[in-house]
Length: 288
Image (cartoon, rainbow, N blue to C red):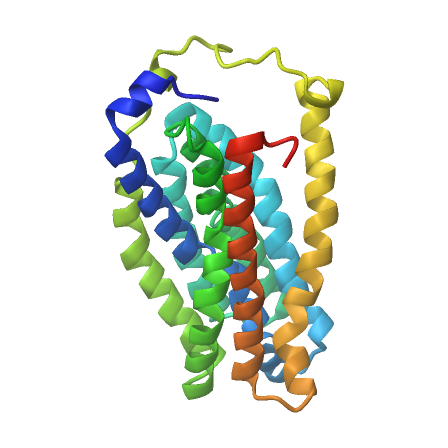
């Protein structure tokens, strides 16, 4: 979907304020992608189970994140992003609160997969990226790159912080702290996104369809190709990412060094994502 240039030009300042709010919301709200990665070894030790069992909590979080993103994206098309993000904020806080009280692995899986992944993290990515495209015309590529960097920025900020609190307390107390913080911090940011673009409100049903056929494919075919590309890319990236902190401790490094390695890994992703967003504004997304 696109916003007409005139309506975007009238409110450039608001578009950037909105982008900053959405980026902050995504950075804080995608903590669920990293919490269990940092807490993997302490959880495995407490439950007396293997790391592969605990890493399943990460897997179900990501599955929920993907499937929930479809539902949250559909909902945000109808009502805007504020309501999905508000629900996501509450579900994230509830998910961490309940995960901190898990006495069996299936409870941990349920809290991560359903509440943190499908109803929480899912609301903090796809709807925000799609919404950002509605507020930018000339620098849309860079704007989308900026907002989608929120997941990477979360990976820079959260792992070292989580590791610190796990070291000074334990993973359950850390999860409780996350729950309280998210409940207080996220809803006010969601309220900043209550406004919807005029072009979307005035558009007739189906009014945003396009006749472009990149690669000679119909929109649904192209969408399928992009989904396959994303799956192939992200599986290869996510598996090492999920185990890097635990692996660092296996090599004799402190857990905080593993968290710093994860943060550094994701920091480089921010640079490349912004660079390619800038390039796409100049030569187009397909050529990029």
